[in-house]
Length: 211
Image (tube, rainbow, N blue to C red; front, side, top):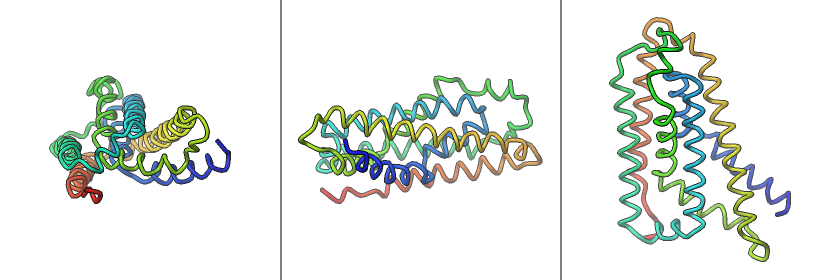
């Protein structure tokens, strides 16, 4: 793969990665509510989901989603319901968890649950599969080994996604003291919950234009 091609892919990928979405919001809220370590594991779950989505897109699932109304709708509803569920959980939380000790905060949610949350957020978004389906063919040279190019592109996206998610989480964690005052954490719960719910309904509005 030419370095110029890789750099072009990277520039496009970074725009998608840096733009706040469900993965970024999950990383930030986990960092603030359960500790930085838990957000790292949710980010690891997310990039694992990215690998699954990228592989599925490369194997043709993206093309199937573009033509199958039933599969597209099923995956869309699953993704939307999960995000809305996360949003309702955040909204209903009445506790200012930032007033608790770090040890107590870290015990609120297990590492496995954090990982699974990140994984589900990644694989339940049909928009992500369609994104990879549309993006990858533009940068793959069919005259060269496709598997090697797939690994390069996917690994690049995963590494930079993880880096950006950890950066967001670290930034949020450093501001944890600010949220420990008054009822700011409760408002954070409501705001983040509302955003999750909004993302969920946004996915429900997603239309398969290729059908």
